[in-house]
Length: 323
Image (cartoon, rainbow, N blue to C red; front, side, top):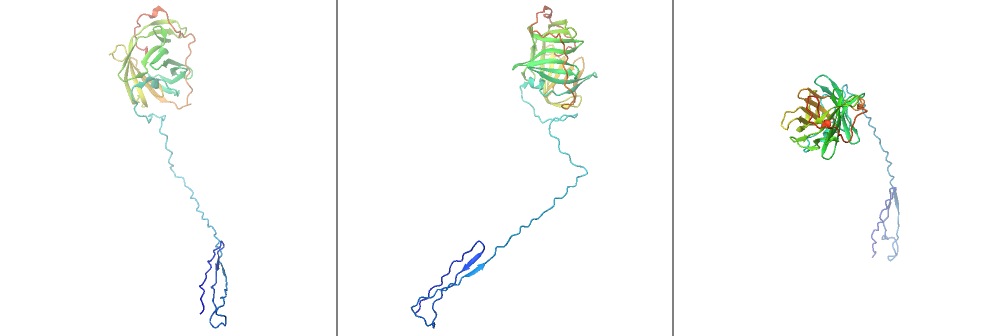
């Protein structure tokens, strides 16, 4: 009896080029072949080579033309940045400041902004806060000549030195106990607080610095209000404005008021008898030349003053402000 050899399948080999090799069957001797019944079956391998070519992929590039934008007849402008705008109304992004308030922030401005201040009587002066070392100056005038007030500060106080703007061709200097410079206000302050002072006030002529009048003047400075925003008679609105009042008695009526704004300095003033002034126009940076402080060659700011004529109390008369 013949044994049947099972069919042996050679695993097809898949090549990179898609070549498949299919093996043949092992065929045993068939009945009637006349062969020896014990003979080894003949192995016949008929390879079949099937080549499957790899398809060539041709990439398709689709070009979608960009539509040409047709400008609108009324293009929409880009929005302006939210900052100070030089218009009749000034916009701000500031919130209220917490007390105590640092007077140096309101009085001293490092940006040198130029702005006009209008007086109720019709005159106008260009203002600019300028710095020189440890001092700063509130200047009032123009690029040819500007009157000025000299101030400086420490960790505790705001000081005043010389003021060339009292009028009548005069300037004055302030001293405490004969020493140049006078404490004018606390540096850190709360609304409602009152500060007492008694400086020596010395008036001189600008033309030759001759002594005209001097004496002590006791007065009080009241921190009347802090305004997160304040609108002036011009319609200009500024952020962070403090309002101070000069009194001749602790509970008296204000003889004068002063308004200081962060980023500007002195922006307004009023007198019980001499009208008022207010910021009326703000110049863009570089639009106008800087103010030039007037020069008084003989101005005396000596450290100590010994003239006994300045020892008596000085009477107040309207117009001699900020003393």
